[in-house]
Length: 462
Image (cartoon, rainbow, N blue to C red; front, side, top):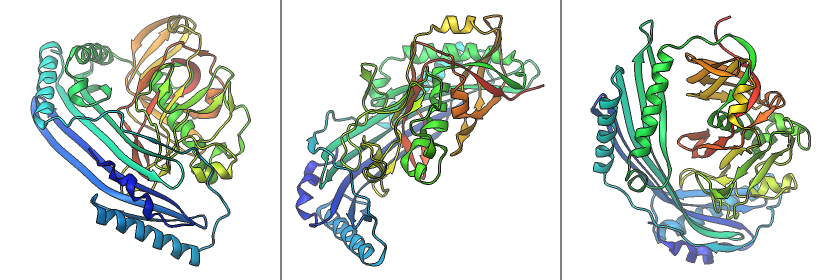
């Protein structure tokens, strides 16, 4: 674990400037098996310190790949020098930094670093279960993965903090032959917040997920193509969460708003049906911890929830301290960096569509002809909110009942137009946190939502 001695270096901050000092350790561990053979075994660690100094509205930045007294003094000196240089030679900005409360947050819990042998034995145990219980597959892949981000942050104004965010997962991909002899695959991730030795002491949940995944694979092997065109769909919580993150969340990040995203002119306007509310949660949601809690961001802002859409109305952007002043909003702890050598960017944390009052069974029963979309393998969206996602697990809905499985297809649309068609929202929420968000830097995020009923354009056969 990193030393808290960084807090002592605040005495080196220069007068007349806003300074941030951050020590950081990123670690990742991965073991992969393909058809019973180990094909990957990796450990990575990145540790260092960085400083960012603001003068005249301009930032100087510096980082070093070690955490010593000499490196701390060096990055502070270089970042201050860079800020002074920019103040002299670049046009200053008029933006201030929004005021924030001050305090200190101590480390809540230390974490263990499991030996690589734990990952290997975990993969072997999962692989053996698949081999024994999934007889009709032609290939199987198992990956045990964990990463953690530990930060010690001290700032001129704001919260000093020592925080760590560990997460760990088992990924399983199963492949079989379809009825016409072509390969068909399905994938799942199991795990969440916490170290791998804590999350996978008991494999009962892993086995349950594999049983479900295998059943979905067999159904998909007998699957049919979706019918192309606009239709009524019910999205799973994970699918709704991905859409909320990719197609809506990025458009309301204030730096992208400044760059001309579709949300730049939609604040205070209706962007979804009245049944839709969307929140970027900090560390608790619905009286439970979020998948990946954020307590303090890299600017020393104590994290708060950001209500992005309330009853269909766009109410807020995600901000840094500087953009919050520009838009006359409150910074809520969204400025985060992935590595010690990265500058903080505005990032989502745990972004979710808020559950409603409908029952999933009633939602299925309400659809005469449509689709239930369960899982997505990939997707993208642009700053207009236009999106396209792949669908890897899905089912027909016929006369209010689930029907045949679907082969891989795509969905597309414009987020804010699609959200206006939402007319049913289920009363439970499903989270996903096993991936990364890409925006110049990767970032671990949580996404989620309830089942939602909406209109979408399906790819498929006419």
